[in-house]
Image (tube, rainbow, N blue to C red; front, side):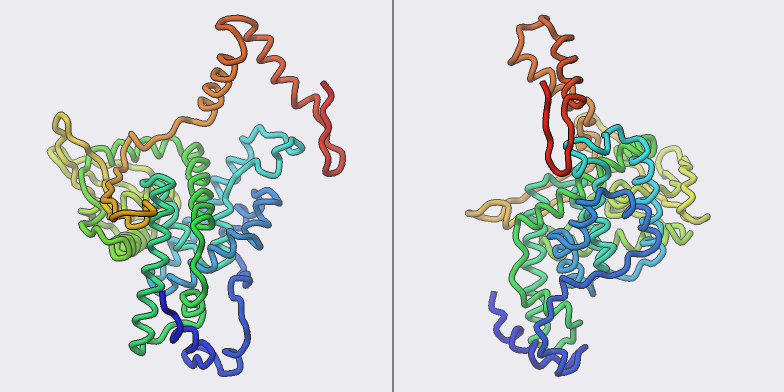
Amino acid sequence: MAFNKLQASLAAATNEVTVAAANINFDFTLVKCEAPKEYEELGNALSPKRKEQAEQGTTHITARRLGALFESVCPPTPNLIKAYGNRASQIAETAKETSVEPSDSIFAAHAGVDGTSIWAAATSSALHVQLLACMLARVWSAAEATSIWFELVQERRKNIEIRYTNGEAFQFSTISAAAQSEISRSSLAEWDSSARSWLRTADRTKTKEQQQLMLIIANVNIPINQDMAILSSVTAAWRSALTTMENLVSGMPQAVNSGPALLALRSWHLYPDFLLVGRDDAEVRFRDPLIRSGGMLTVGLARREDGDNHGVFWSLSLAHMNFYGHPVPTEARLGHECAKVPFLQFIQAAFGALLGKWLHPGTEIDSAAQLFCLIPSSCRKSGKEWSCRI
């Protein structure tokens, strides 16, 4: 992408900065903002390594650049940001209290709540971008979501270049983000991975509410939108979800006939009351204290037919899914089939697979399990070094 004119303009930028400031080689990704007070408990629940990564590492840089790049895309949602922070802190505290990982274990630096993306966004003024990361991680696979992020960044930079060339004013940080080198796929994959890890933690903490919400979503059949283009489809869904959720959190009733709000509810763990309209109208009361009185969502149910796929679905054309070839038309659906195996069940399956290669079926399984249980007590940490006594 040609950014020669845009980069040259930075030296003489007059939109938001003085000429003197424009001559400074300013790396805005190093700027750290104070996190809103609603997110403080989440920050306290993070391991030192994750907190450092969120405040100074690559996750912070990615959050800051994405936040600057998409700064003017989203409407202000102060009530939603507060409610999301309170819910994230509640989830982090609950998960920390129920964690069984010893604080001095060999994996202690990587144990506990992975709220790295949220804390990075909270200290980078990029919380709207983290909300989008959760939406994409909820419905798309890791490879698909990374491809969507990569194309979003490319298309947004191109869009800024065209509009700036035509004389439109932008914030200095937005122009800087567009003029700098592209965000690598590995950084975007790391960003997506942290959002996925947070969703798994939050889902475990809010199991009952998530299951009840899925029963509602399984009985609708609505698209996110009809647009197949990445930038326009994703930004439209993003803005729609933010606006609807801001109104619900503020106590304003809403009615929806498309999927962004339902995807947002499933991704952000906020639960307004529902009015379900169908053959038999019904109300579903979540009684979420973070939703002000009056914040009710009206949804029309679809009659289920044998063989129908129900739920919220999203169709996009992924131009960067493959390194070569044409764009790949892809559809993702938010339904029960998106559910993941709980981690404890995954551990049991992995342990069984290991024993299956190691032992003959049915022999000495108890002894093998006892051996693995003794390993943590045989390892000791001295300073930064670990030693094991077998």
